[in-house]
Length: 526
Image (cartoon, rainbow, N blue to C red; front, side, top):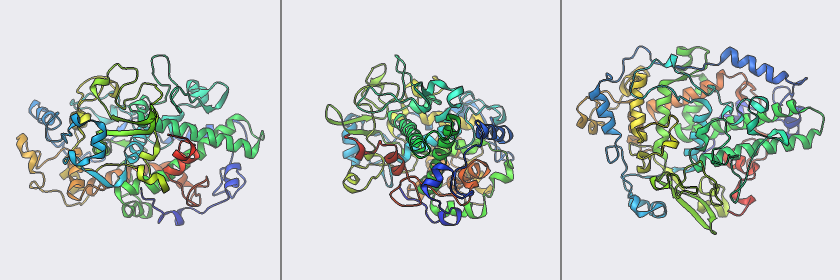
């Protein structure tokens, strides 16, 4: 993955790592600890009350829906997203999970990316779970976004990891050390804390949907715990547990936000788009929503582009399955109800169910040969996603085809067409000829296209390596606007730079995070 370092110099100037960890550096760059227990928590709580929005919003309220919510339109959307239909990559699942990785030519309709590693997919999923959770709006039934609760704070504040903190969410924290997360074992390596039925104790249940996202959640738990250890080593008993927890959360959150701005966003929309917004500000988010942080429904649809990145199968680790690698489909119906299913669904514990991160991120050196790519951004979706286990659906209700669910969501929110939003953003729309495959559904989708499909098609036409046009603008502006509006985000400290250990001084990447958390391949035999 690329790291956008072009914007780091004007935005941030470094202080010493010791100064950062202890609060002894310059006021602009260092983490200033609360002067009394709870001061930081109280300040943060007041900020959230003043600025947060627990409802979804709409960016383009003057644009009509892409289509009327009729039975005919709903049927056309279901046909578009049906198993074996237009969007199905038709992966030959009978070849098995190993051959679909080692012989990608077996699935010519589902191309590998040349620019992204497989971990980008799940980092993107983790980010989504940190800012948006809609568990109540009905599929296919028009619903006002303003009446639909967003169960996550519309900030990159890791509430999906921290929950309400040790007092409000004690089940997430170690009873023997309340400022550290509870991390359990039971496989060969770390696992989420689970009850006897396998249900994980997590602030957001979606972070146990699959084995990779559960492993990423574990990495953040261990990341926080190591920051606690470092702070204690630096300061001993000179501040109380509340101050210690607040300081650690700030350190973890700021490094995480840095990864969003300087690694994740440039990899999916390009550094030039990120730099332009950081330099001159967003073009449309603040003009429509003002200073109110909220998740627009157009973004909620657009961000589902990440479903196109998902591979049908993955190598979870190199040596966890009786000394050999553990390969599995992302979802496999045959795994339903099994204590150690053959696929990579979450909700289970077994010795082989852990992640070897050298498959998902490029650690360089002799580990570089182990990394695998994700899929390109296009209109073809990996076949296992047309048969989701109900446990991977927040509502627990069908349909089980993820593309059908995404498309029906357009009717729920009365989303404008991709063409209409392109015109509103002064971007040249795709033509009906470029979308001619949609004419078969007989409802005019080639001229007024569901936004999710439109964004995937934009990227496909451009080669599939990144979002472009409407997709790039929606994703980048909302991401960066949420960070710019958050007075507790690292962007509010213009001189701050990452100061935890990293391969390149003054920056911080996912590889650095996993290394610091000691879940990297160099810290254990995987």
